[in-house]
Structure formats: structure tokens, C-alpha cells
Length: 81
Image (cartoon, rainbow, N blue to C red; front, side):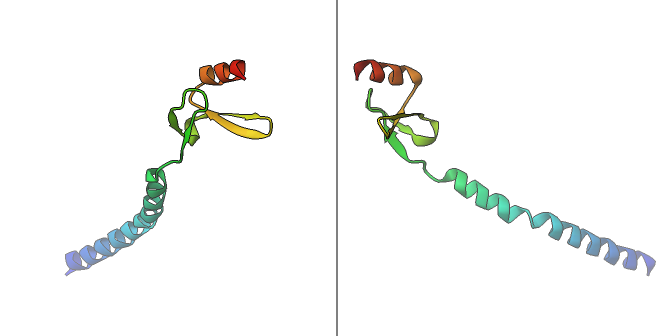
């Protein structure tokens, strides 16, 4: 009889412990969804390649934002202009 009572107590504690751990899982799923969303692609004005906006080199020229694939393209674009 005591074994059965201890078993029920252990199962109850395990159940509440797992409930506590599972509360954080949905928030992780939401973050993962945001990470999988496609990023906006922009065109480099110098070499004409498309690159993700988040990894581009940004430069404001004459009040307008330009995005370049690397610093070399930025330098060449400024020399050309």
C-alpha cells in the first residue's frame, strides 16, 4: 500500500515538473519561426547581386540608404560616383 502511495506522489511530482518545463517550449517555437522567415533581399548598386538586407553593408549617400554586398563594392561605387 505504501509503495502505491509513493508511486502516486512520484508521478504527481513528475507531472508538475514536466508541466513547468513545457511552459518554455512554445516560446522557443515562436522564436524558431521568426528565424525561419525569409529575409528581404536587396540589390547591390555596384555589382548588381542580391544579398540579404541583414548582412549587407549599409551606407547613407546624399540622404538615401544604399546596401552593398561588401566593403569593396562600396569603395568601388564611391570611386565611380
